[in-house]
Amino acid sequence: MSDYNQAKADTFVQNQLQILNNAGIAIMISIGHQLKLFDVLAELPPSSSKEIATAANLNERYVREWLAAMVTGRVIEYDNGKKTYSLPQEYASTLTHKNYPNNLAVLMQFIPTLAQAEDKILERFKQGGGIGYAEYPKFHRVMAELSDQTVLAHLIETILPLNQDVVTKLKQGAYVADIGCGLGHAINLMAEHYPNSQFVGYDLCNDVVTEANQRAEKRQLKNVKYIEQDVANWKPQAEFDFITAFDAIHDQGQPAIVLENIVSALKDNGLFLMQDIKAHTNVHDNLENPVTPITYVISCLHCMPISLSQDGVGLGACWGKELAEDMLKDAGFSHVNVNELDHDILNYYYLARK
Image (cartoon, rainbow, N blue to C red; front, side, top):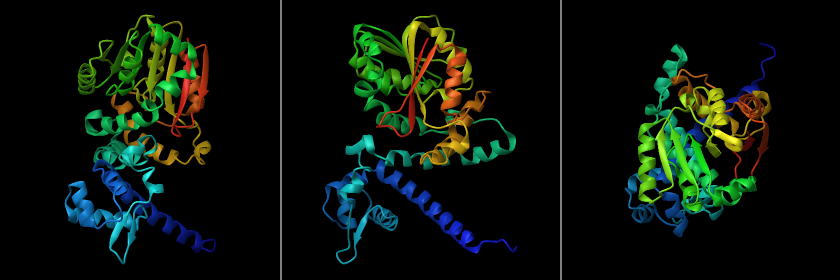
């Protein structure tokens, strides 16, 4: 072909190889995060693989191979003369548990976690339909850890003060619901911080609800409970002062019905706080967003199949601000305000008033 651009083809090949390398390194970063190898390296001077393995209480041969991947992936530095490895403090700031609000290694866990469902996803591409939560055994734990970063670390001081009336009501005594509560990290924190208020968390998964109740009981929280509930089939009264949903609405089978039910559940002038993905509805408008590629990946491999498994609409994680605002207003909210917070590059924070 006369218009074939060899330089363009060569560049594309190099990009594909970089994608392949980065995908592998992402898995290795996930392993290093879970085994706390980065934390060990951050505390050690330049050390041998044996010294690192001993400090981490891990097998040296596996640690040495992991270190080689990290060195060639430009994550860890290697002194060839001394045969020692080190983690620069500039890298440790986004890889260690100590710096968990900025720990990007948490996100890397999504790659191996979602890959577990690849065979099922291949079937669904051919046959349609969805995949239930049971096919993602680690997902709730990874999602809870991500929520700790984006929500828990900033909930009391930054997120809730987006509306001071809510903070005042919580201090006085409010009735609060959390939709898609997961393991209950956020609602437990609110229950501890606002003992005059009562909290209830709803989630579709029985095992998650059971564990959430156990966690609340262990923390001796008397003002919170968790209930297994498909909120699309929820028949609430106008009883709640405040309802939250952290990264949960786009996973719902029938998100429009869920939003209508939230409106019905709120008292007059009640407030809904929705954290959801920072994206636009039109894919073209997401080209310059550095995290939308992985967001679409997570959506295709998890969010959309979860919704479709409930005979749902498969909204997807990148439903976008424009559609989200329209759906909130169509559900019956009188006013919708969209907020961006400096600590969270992944999400918008919607405040919707009944």
